[in-house]
Structure formats: structure tokens, C-alpha cells
Image (cartoon, rainbow, N blue to C red):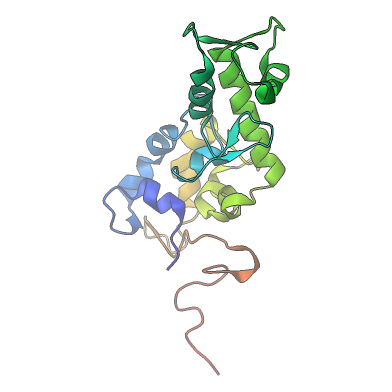
Length: 205
């Protein structure tokens, strides 16, 4: 059975069921996913870590890395270790990061400017790809879809604080808990697990 990514996040006792107690703790679990502390959960924060990063084709930021990881990679070019990047320190093929991130046009990139730029780049890349990587995890997973009440592809702080109520709507048999079958990913086109529930098609004429 294909399992929802949210099962792995919420099922702390690993019994394959999100119990009533685990549902009550959902807000805390989702808050911890906001890795960059910007008050929202985006697709790059939902996606499991560890996949190979992909460059953006301009020698700069990498898709698949968190903004903090991207900045740490860029700061390796900080030759004088002053916590900033100048054009002289960065290879010519990467000069585009100044046009994208140097907000005050002083020819110097601070860590704060790089974090802001990497965060925007990550979010823009996710929207541009339309969730192609990972099959659009936020849309496919009923839990994340239930939390994203304004359907903007992100889970805001207000939305994750309302997680317990949102999850209760997925409890189809009203037993106070969520099973893997109730939160099975919605694979497009009737893929693995998509549109089928255990036992729904056991009978054949």
C-alpha cells in the first residue's frame, strides 16, 4: 500500500495509524517543518531530503537544496571569510547571483541577501515546475491538501495551527483516527493507489 508522506510525519509510534493523540499534536509537527522560519510550509520543505541537488543552469542556486544549504555552498567562495561575497570572489559564470540578490546594488552580497534570494528562487522554481518533481506532493497528499485551505500551494502558520480540525474532516468512518487508506496519496491518472481504496474492488463480475 502506498503511504501518504504525512503518515511518516504524524505517526510517531510507527503503527501505520494517526491516532487521536497524534492528530492533536499535528500542529506542533507541522510547525517543525518550517525549516527557514518564514511562517509557511512550502513544497521544498515537505519533500524528503537527501535527493541530489540540481543546478538552475546559471551556475548559482540549486533546486532541491534548502535555502540555507544553498547559501552555505555559495559562502564557500568567501575567500577572506568576512561573511560577505564580492564579485571578485565569485567565478564569472556565477556573476548572475549579484543581479538577482544584490538589493542595495552595492556590489556585495551579505548572508541575509543570499538567504532571501535563495528562498525566493526555491519557491519560484517549485511554482514554475508545477510540482512536477515528486508528483506535486502538496496536491497529491490528502493531508497537505486538507491543510492548504486557500489552495495557494503553501501551508501558512494559521493553516497548520488549525491542523487538528482539518484532519478530522479526513476521518471518513469517524473513529477518531486516520488510517493509511484514508490518507492515501491521490496519484494522477489512477496511478498506484490513486482513486482506489482497499477492498473497493475486491468483487469482480
